[in-house]
Length: 308
Image (cartoon, rainbow, N blue to C red; front, side, top):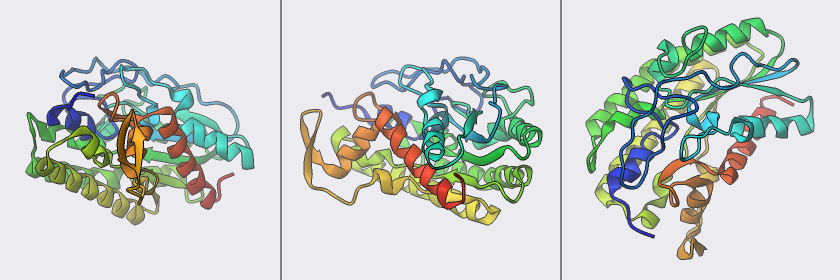
C-alpha cells in the first residue's frame, strides 16, 4: 500500500476520538468527513445526536463523549447501534437486567464544547447540561454512565508535517482544567450509587512501522497520547469516577511476526491495524472488531463496579 505523509496520519490520529475540526469549526453527529491520505476536510455544521430525546424506558445506560461513543466511521456515517456503548449494554444484559442506551455522544466534541456546547445541538445547549437533565429526569433508572472525552483538545496541535509539542502541552492543560468540572458535575448528577466510568484512549501510533511515519514526530505524538491518558486517569480517580484504560486491549506485548493485508508485521502492530481503520483508511476510529473489543472492556469494568 502507498506510504502516507505524516500530516495525513497525525491529522487523523491526534483527534483520537473525534473527527471534527478546531474549536471554532462545528462538527456534526452525522456528517463530518474523515481524514484521508492526501486531503484536508472541513466538518459540516452541527446536528442533533440521533438518539437524543429517545431514551428507552426501564434501566438505562447513559453514554457520553465524542465520536468513539457515537460510532463514527470513515466517510461520515455514525453506527450508534453497533458502537461500543450498545455492545457493552448487550454484554451486561446477558448477565443481568437488560439495559437501554441513551447515547448523547457528539463527534468532534472537546472538553470545552462538552461544557459550553457548539458542536452538536441539544435542547439543554451542551452535552453536560443534557446529561444532567436526563439524569435528573430518570433518577432511579440510570445504572451506568460512561464518558470518553479529551482527544479532540489536541487536534489544533497538528500543522503541516509537525506536531507542536508546546501546543500539545497547552491542550493537555485544557483537559486538566475542564475534565474535573465535567466529572464532578456528572458525579453529582448521577448520585453516589451510579458508577461513572471514564475511558482512556488507545494508541494508534503503534501502527507507525506499518504506516512509515517519521520517528521524531512519532515520539512527540506518543508523548502527547501518554500524557493525555495520564491526565484522564488522574482526574477520574480524583473525582470519584473509575478510569477504564484501553491500552492493554490494543497494545499487545507480542512482536511475533504475523500478517496484515499481505504484509508481515509484528502482532502488536496487526492488533491496532485490525481494531482501527488507521492502516486501511488512515482513520483512528474503531472497526467492528474494535467496537466489540472496547464494548467488552467497558462491560467488564461496569460489572466490576456492580452493574448487571
